[in-house]
View 1: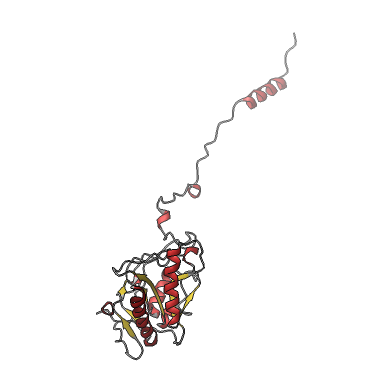
View 2: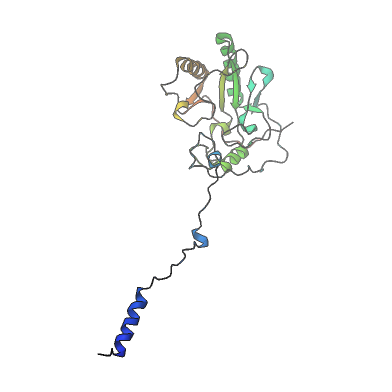
Length: 253
């Protein structure tokens, strides 16, 4: 009988040890690898009509306005009021706008005198010829309010940069729609400030009724010196006069 050498016992011992199951290591996630929870209401962070990849956080508007706004100079400004037959529904003086923030401290509609005079003639013609009225969404937008709007939505696809300024900040642009004799809005195809192709003047899929309403508004505005822009059926700018950007803010009385 042969006796195994000590080296053989050692070799057998090592082979048996290597065949044992290695202990399992727990794969605990590190602090940085933990899953980030996405809020269920993320769809409500921005308005439906704006790309959700454009606005991710809407801050509160700033309050950088003159402490005591000066009174309007009658030679520089003319106020359109409800006493004249206009329906004032100034969206940026409330939270009923695409930012869901109040931009203006109070609702007043000022325009340059030349533009305001023509708007009164437009009001009269629409009433006499069609029995329609005018609802106004926005008028002159002071520079400080344009800055507020830009601070909330710093995207030139939706808001004109304050240093460039829009026709609103020159007192020459107005946003408006038509109403019936009861003051109800006519069907214009989309709401005010709708950022989609359906708001474009050239959108062809609207009903004949919508097309007729838009044609009445556009043809009447153009007759009195206002021009439109391609993407917004509600926006018109007075073309027969030019003004620089203005910082004047109307008083809230």
